[in-house]
Length: 372
Image (cartoon, rainbow, N blue to C red; front, side):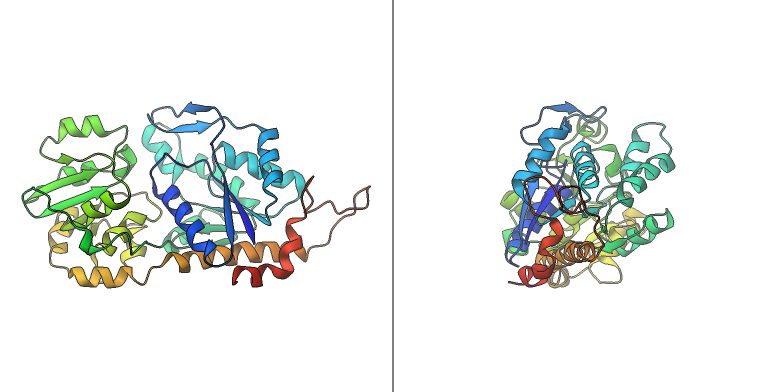
């Protein structure tokens, strides 16, 4: 099976969405499913207001159609609700093609943090966007429940995984900072709530890995914290493994893949008891969730690093990819069973795009192909 994923988030961005999609593609390939991407590459782009470093692609209808038809996918998944996501959705609606979506970012809360836009307005727009999808995939049970309360339908679980070969305790490098080291990693932006961490009275050293529009202000306000800049791959894994506690202060992340990456390095989590940490940590003895983040940080120092590593070993990207593939297959199979109106040229109207075979045509062999 060949799946085309439309996404506005792509390299060189470094965030959970990009890491999730690239990891999904690698894992799905091992299951006999090829995933290609329709990305901002090749489109002119526009700076996102209030967010230096983040740009939106200025996509156009004809080029989006050309790329989809050139790819000849068996199924289409829309990963983001930006310009490319909207264009891909419009294409599928015009041609009667089934598609799936994923809800990966709490944009309503992010927008509200930057301006006086009611959260309910943004959720209404997102609800309309996802309503046309056969399945909207979400990463945690608590996010599914929250979206359901806001009127979202056809929700399916798609959890996340971790590369336990890259992220492992043995990669730790010596950091010449007073211990204990409390570390966080991610975009340095207002929605990440880093002030809640950096303002704590903790022993040892507070370390921040990443960059973003809020960095200069936080460096000025918290001169004792160590800002190490953006890191990826082995350098990131080596720094994570060197921490004593990984602090996740976000109140809005839908999952937080970096939590699993820290746990794979044997580093316990300290976080607020909110969506993301609640679903990743739950009742497992690998982190401390507390409305008092400082108390959570200190309590996490007593957690077994071996327990953290053992827990992460159960969270594979293969499991995540199988969930994704199952939702895509079911959407295509359901579409293949729907009645089709006849067009004037004798073909079928639903599921037919110029220059490519019907998406539903693969339904009969989809499940076998996904397990090859």
